[in-house]
Image (cartoon, rainbow, N blue to C red; front, side, top):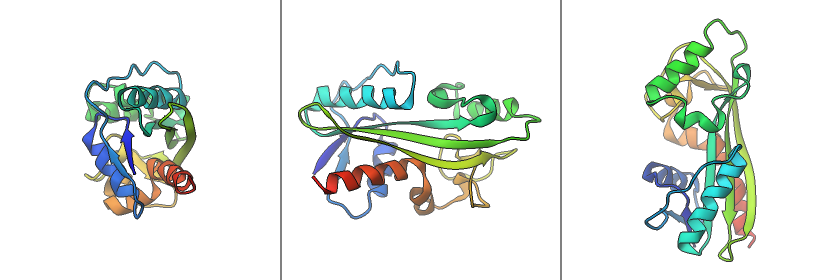
Length: 188
């Protein structure tokens, strides 16, 4: 079974295909012209917008995710603006660390919301995956991307960026949501 992954990021398609483990699903990039207007006010709304856009171009099973980092002391920021919180990944990390300077409560979570649309264009399933943790004082590790170097998952002594790809794929917010989607698809 092929499912269009509503993303123009080949890295995300590769990551999703690695997370899916042993199932007969192949996630593929959407057709040319995929350019959703992410104007939603939540991960759920943006996930739906992307899934609908992918379906409009493909008219087949389409899966979208919207994800980001939510920091309690910042009122949930950067949230849906995680990828646009500053111009570059390094500047996004610097902004978060500057905003948390002197703050004791550094609890945070990565959130991933997924929406699956069937070939008829209807929402077949949606879910959320969460990875709880906290923000550390300085970046550590070179694996991963985004905020991974400053995010220490609960129960771990290494940041996401210090973990192996396999370990990250076992505990990440995206993998938790994707596992729910795959379980849903298996019973179709």
